[in-house]
Length: 72
Image 1 (cartoon, rainbow, N blue to C red):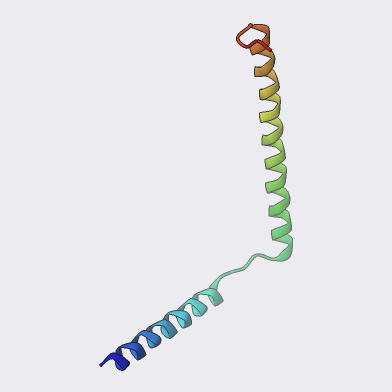
Image 2: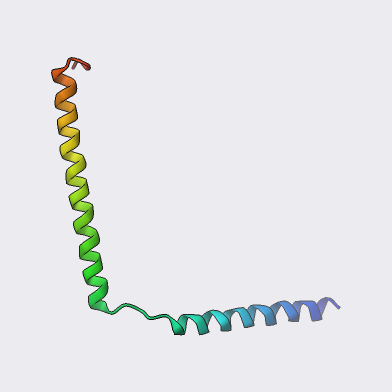
């Protein structure tokens, strides 16, 4: 009984992996150029938002010092 159950488990794993492979073959993978373009966009957005956060940090730091809320 135990051996047949193990075999059943192995067959289920095999069936699962075959189904995964089948689904992966249906995926429309992006081209290299699309990946490069999307990467450039992501890096550009990160740099832009990082710059905005940096500028806001400078402004708030200046305001805190001018208003005397923090002494250095």
